[in-house]
Image 1 (cartoon, rainbow, N blue to C red):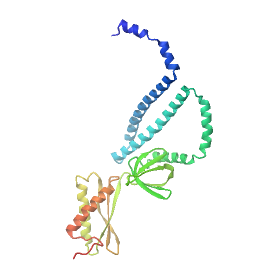
Image 2 (cartoon, helix red, strand yellow):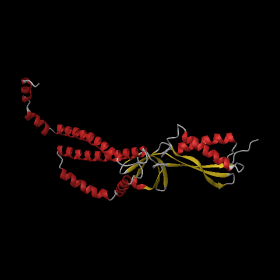
Image 3 (cartoon, rainbow, N blue to C red):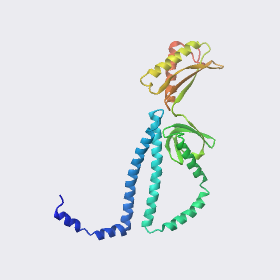
Image 4 (cartoon, one colour):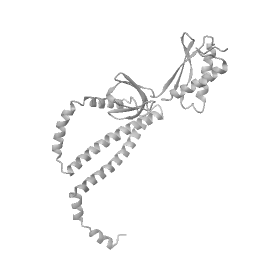
Length: 291
């Protein structure tokens, strides 16, 4: 309970002096602005996270992975964009508190903007292209993509995506920073699903019916295994005799798997197929003859 002493202590505060410190002390005003901005950022970023999760989960996606990628991409972009806007407003408020005339600053900024605008066409192009990437859901953070940039093919995992740039990490660990407007063509290798497309070359002496049976058996066993069942949507199976080469018969095998898992699944399938071929005496094309 509040005592009489507490009330007297509260009333004894020099409110006029406190008001003077808050209103006329520039350093205090700037600190309050920064603290308020930080609190506002925390609240807004949390709210963005909640709104994006509700929005994304209100739509149907092919898998939880697609849903998570879309959620992470939208959250990152919205949080960055809103954060930049809030800090720009805070900076203008702080400049006003420090005694700068905003009208003069804005006039100068307008003149500078006209000059810079002539050299900012590529930046505008990047922003517009970025809006289409986001709006059309062309690729997301975590997707594996191939990009044609100035005639050079770049591929890797999308580490970060903003309205202006895409950060792409390749298998060597190199980070490519690409303006969204610079990509001439983009191939998404991990959207909804991926195909395992394998060519198997066997010697002409091989029985094609036996080869087909082995390929289908290996594909079925792998799809039912505890390790790979979640990654494989459709087992890898014999598709056709694809070509007759100088050294042997080329077999095409095809399967459908989880996005970005096609390389791991293909590698394991080849390993298992090699072991099974060795057991059953099937010879690969070009393999040295046994003595």
